[in-house]
Amino acid sequence: MENYVTYSLILSNQNSEGYYKRISEFTDEVLENASKNLLTNVKEYTNFLLDFKLEEIRSNEEYYLELLCFGLLWKAYGKIALSIRTAPFLTLSRMAEWRKQNQKLKPAIDFARGILVTLFLLPKTELDKNIFKPSLQDIDRLCLWLEATGEFREQALRFIRWRAYWETMSQKRWEEGCDDVFKFVDWFKSRANIVLGEFTENVANFLTESGNHYYWREDRVQCSRTRDEYHLNMVGAEIMNRAFKKDFINTEVKAILVPGCMRKNINKCKAKKIKEGLICINCDSKCNVNKLREMGTNNNFKVFIIPHASDLSLWAPKPGKPKRGVIAIACVTTLVEGGWELKRYGVCAQCVLLDYSGCKKHWHKEGVQTDINIRELKRILNN
Ligand code: SF4
Image 1: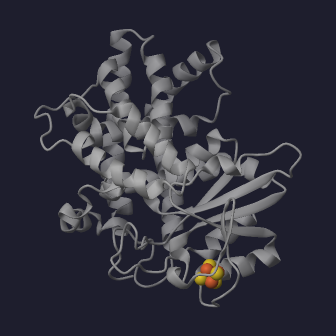
Image 2 (image 1 turned 120 degrees about the vertical axis):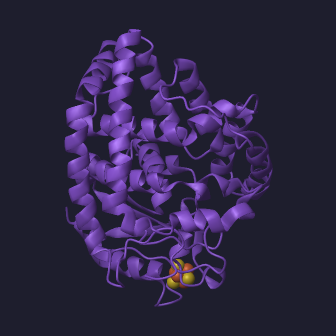
């Protein structure tokens, strides 16, 4: 697909089947490498979680992903976070939560957050020294920054738990653990560029060309993600789909959450508003949401259009109701965060990536109707 905004899973005007094959093979490679380099860290951490009864132990792969996210986000944002002397971190974090829970106030909150994010969270000058191994205080600082952006809350919550464990380690062991993580992250960055780079070729251009366009805007951090972060989310989504698959299969009813940009014509859309979002009423046979709705009538799933950054706790299991599995369709940059948020609410979830991004609100001047790989959706639905 030509003229895509930042990424496209479709190469040579075919479909995204090649992407799904490649991401599956690459994820195997990432996990194999992680088990060689990070297993000791993960074993020690899970012993700590067990000793203090902090959580039910999950698969090693989920903890590898947490360490990969930590190392990569530290490299991407550590210097920015440490460059800030003072900022209303807590207010910004709270505002990010309010905008999810109150769609009516969202435009006003976004306006205010856009100004505050630019003023406080993205300093004009950054520290001019590289900090290779963060101290515990540096990690605190990073977590505050991540939460305040509203884009990384779930990841910050996980890093805070790791931080509690790191505090119990000797300096020597901490240094060794850090070396393992950053060595692995460096390998991931360069290898992902080779394997997945074809799908994200336009990210660098987009970041250069969009220049000051996102200045003072709430979505500035969301739309300024690095190419490494796209690759991280692609692999993260695959790891999560594998880890959460068993729970999803065992659900009785299914719901598919789609973003509004999959609609043919947003301005003329007649979808009905309900508590969870919008329900398609079949006003346009060429609309991609309508095609999914139709598919759902024969395949026992319902389709809900949900706004970006909406309250995912609505999908949490309810006593007395059938167990519901959710397939979330989303743009690459939001996958890991959304997956962990659904997990925190106990939702049995899977995800399918938008083949490319194109919504008018964040990415494209006129807006283009986005789409997914239906074969991938069927594979998930049919186990
Ligand atoms: S077909 Fe459905 S989702 Fe598409 S524009 Fe019409 S009501 Fe909206």
